[in-house]
Length: 220
Image 1: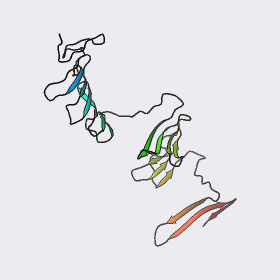
Image 2 (image 1 turned 90 degrees about the horizontal axis):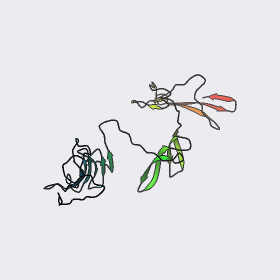
Image 3 (image 1 turned 180 degrees about the horizontal axis):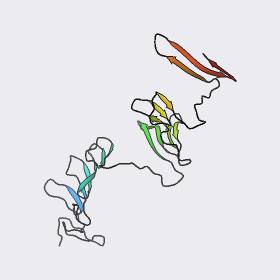
Image 4 (image 1 turned 120 degrees about the horizontal axis):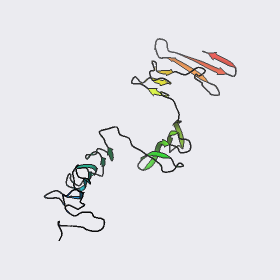
């Protein structure tokens, strides 16, 4: 004696009556509604709100819990989490602080995100399992041009709203400002190290430099 157009019973199903708190059932909806409900679709029942819904948008598939659709596969292939109208291939939204976690399941595998053009890998960034460094890796040229070691201090590198760069300070007052503790400074290493100066005032048009050769220091 089925209570609905399709009723499934068995050892894994606790109840069979649609609309009753705690019961598990499939519901086909009414009218233009097309969905499958696996428990009472509201926020009050003890096992509330599990639904697969295809009636809210042309060609879209929605997954709902607690009386809300929380994940959508849109007809254009875009996926929304916390957002039923995704603007991008993956669009994640939340009304509180939001984080995306990328984690390996062992201590020997890296956790990284890869960027590709036409499915050809170009860059990836993330954490290396070998030393916990956060790096940007140039796949094409097999190079790591940028890395941050774990333990780097606050304000190690800051770019403010005026495009001024601070190293060791979060309030640079010049284009480049370096702040460090005693016995620290700026080091230039090369076979022939130079520090160049250029006066961009057209009335002067003068370049200067400080250089070192062997034990000799030159200013010119």
